[in-house]
Each structure stands twice: as structure tokens, then as C-alpha cells.
Length: 370
Image (cartoon, rainbow, N blue to C red; front, side, top):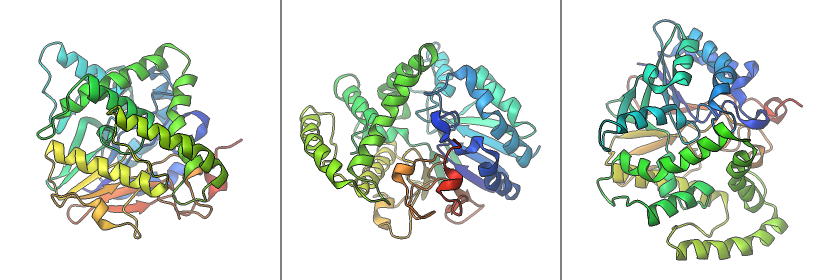
């Protein structure tokens, strides 16, 4: 089955930075669907921390309708949940926990949209005539290709984001994550309460505070470093001293390890270290793994291939994002691994291939309209 994988669409994000709500920017993706049988949205397809569930279907409707029409009656749209749209599957998980003990989550569990809740059911209606399916936490695209969003990385990444520190606190004082033989339920025990807290804030109150917190890590990295763009040396030096002291304190508390190095390269390495550790603990030894979450596509030609290979020999590929984040981008189009509009093609055989569908679009075209 010819498959196209995209991740981190964040449809509904504040400020218009989510590109697939714009017909001109989703056109290359819709055109590409004519050549495939299946579109996989690898998590964070919806932004449920900056817009409540009740508004999500209206915001995402035009994209799902266009994708479903392009795939046609014989096509399939497969959705996974990530950390920003964990609410898509949270109700389904909670319902199962009411009648069976924890431990039912395997590497790939099918989730019937009709049982996942009103939002999932509405998305299935919008995607018609294509069939919408859901799975969690990952899915086997082929016998040798496993795909997952990658939010479990936040328990192992060396990048001190808000979620990394919150996950570290959960793992340090609340739950125990096995060193070997971990299950998805072990990761859910540490992370799902964090997601539920953010979800409730968004559903019941003004989402501005949640949005501000979610963007704090990105703004800090902009000031300190940014792969593919010039640093701000004065601001970085001023922040760097406090940052280094904070990292020492975080590691001393047992919330790490997190990295003291302030560079875009450290951001890349931290995410890749995290996914390698997740795959090791879950026992995933597939020849190929596709993930998202970090918004950094790869590997790029200049990357060290060893960073993108696990100890078991698994080659990992990151699908990047469809979000315009100028603070991480190069001046010229498509020169940064954070350039939006990437996808991964998975054919009937051969390794997954990274493709760039918006590589010819510049800042003027990607920037949200005034």
C-alpha cells in the first residue's frame, strides 16, 4: 500500500502558524495524495491545547474534506494521537480502564472512531468518501516499518522543555519506568496525567495561559540558539548563565539528565537520543521507524547517520512538521531541517523516503496573513 506520512499539523494553532488551513499551502499535499493509497497523520494533527474540542472539527474540516476527496472511496486516512491531541484517544483509554486493568496497550492498538468520541466521529464524516481509521500509540505501515508520534521521547530527551521536566518529575516521584521491557502503558502512566491537566485547562478556561506555556521552550531556544539560523550572542550570553545554573539544579533533583549545551545541534541530538531510548525500552527492532514530535525533519544529507540509527540497527526518519516557526528557519527556503511541509513516502518496498512538498515556498508565502 503506497503511503504518505505527515506529522505535527497542529491544525487550530493560534496565530495562523498551522499551514494546512490555507488552501494554497495544502494544495501540494492534496496533489500528492493522487499517487498514494493511504495518508497517515502521525500525531498532533489537531491542536487541542490552543482550541477546545468543540471547535476542532470546524477548524480542521476543510483539510479533512479535501484529503478525503483526494484519497477517494478506496483510500484510507489513518490518524494517530500525539501529545497535543492526546484527547482524541484519552476517552477511549479511560473507558477501557473502567473494565480492564492497565496493560492492554500494545505497540499498535486499533481505535474505532465511533468509540473514540464525538470529535473522532465527526472527523470520519468529514473525511468521507475515504475511510478514517485510528491507532495508538503507533502503527505498522509494513512488516518492517513501524511509525509512532514520538511523544514518549519526553521522558528521555536531554532538551529541557516544559514537558521534559514535568515528565521527569512524574518518573522521579510518581511512577517507575522500567529500564527494559517497558510497555506503552508505562509511558502513559507518566505522561497522560500531564496531558489531561493541559486538556482540562483548554476545555474549561482561557487557553492563552496554556499556549504561552507551550511556546516558552521554543522562545528560549530562539534566544539561545537555533539550527539553521544565526544566534543572538548578547541575549544568549545573558540567558546562558542562568540556564546553566538551572540545568545543574534540574539534574541534581533527578529530573534529567538534561543538556547544558546551547545549540541547535544539542536540540537535534536530544530528540534522537530520546527516540532511540524509547525504541530500546519498548523492544522495537524494526528495520525502519518513522516518527515526528520534534518538528525537525531528517535525516538531512549533512547529518551523522549514526545518530539516526539505533543500537539494534533500526534506521529512524522524522517527518518534520506543517507549522511555520520562523525562529528556527533559515533565510533562504528549504535550507533548514525545520522548514515546514515535509512528508515521508513509504512504498511497497525500500526504505522510507523524506520528501519536501513546500521546499519552494519562501517566508512571504508561509507567513500568516496580516
